[in-house]
Image (tube, rainbow, N blue to C red; front, side, top):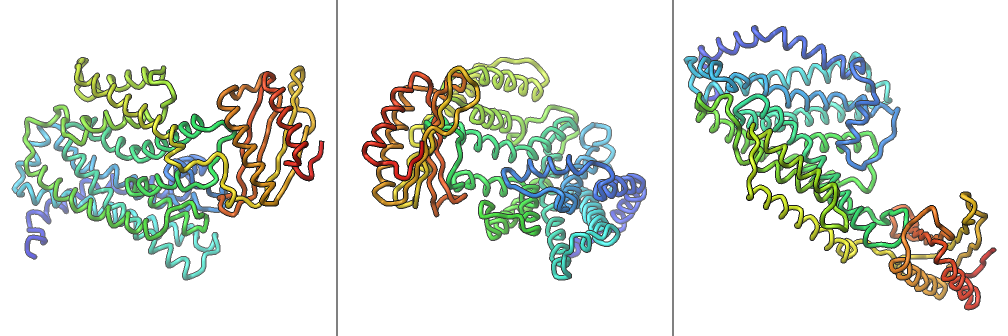
Length: 495
């Protein structure tokens, strides 16, 4: 218990340090207060940032959600900047020698600076929360009940707790880096990495689905496949967790958003991770050597891990049906440039090139696997009979000499089990022909065939498949229409 108490020497150092940095603390409070009140940045910029950290989740502008979220954004900004400022002395040899020569044990010096950061983080965050809740009168402006205002305060206290976890993680990163540029780049990289992870996997899924299906206007009837990447994104990113909590609080959450229980689990995992980072940061601080200050950073979790990881995410985000493409060349250049930034010199290594091309090959194999298996069976181009209740078929005819479409050439509908089974078989034939004969070329289109099914299992209540056929496919489509009419596959149709 005595080890948790500060000695007189340590208390004097804390008092001196806080007084010395008082002006900076006041300036920080003023800047963040202007931001939270909306006087520093337009709401549109805040909204864009929130959209990034919210992935695909929708929200309604103008309802105050983006304004209420400014408090937790400030917590994240403090968690990012405080470690850089508090431990900047270790980035140069003279500062390192000066601070480490203080009559304070190294382990205790780490505790002191870490606690000073906690003090600033918690105090400034609480001041911003109180100021926003009381002086801006956000709770009355958005007509939140007393119970809602209490839950809003509790939610932001939880955000401060998550901010402490983020602060601890960034503290570990800063202590493991040997110069300020590397520390800034590593913090920025780990802030954006979850976003890159989310959007890269989303792009891979969409590209693979487009390559494996024949219809246009790609959409998922069931968002479960895309939702699968929401949970790891929330686990990896504290800002995303905060964003999701605010979505729930403001009642804009939908079934596509992960469950609250899983968000709590993600927060618990971050608490455990923060404890590990604290112990690792303390251990690394005790082992600091003066000659390392200002040198290149070579810890495994920095450049050696991030460069191939980011390269792989970029590869899967731009992967196509071709093994090699222009995008791969650009990523290779960026890969080599990143190594130059990491080691501050131009160097070519066969091992580095082999690693990159193995990552490119892995990305291509993953793309082909998703394409050939229709996203491992998650994407069904032709719905199952038991999942649809009725259908509507619409065919639009285009004139080759006129860019605007003609009136609907044919439309029809049906709801009986026999009619549904027939139209599903016909859609399968259309799909197979489309895959073998033509592409989605707008300049030569002759017919657009659209199947729409009412479905209780689809996320939006319906399933839609649209196919474009060119002038060369005109005879095939007209033959299919003749057969549909002849066999009464289309009921209640109009021409």
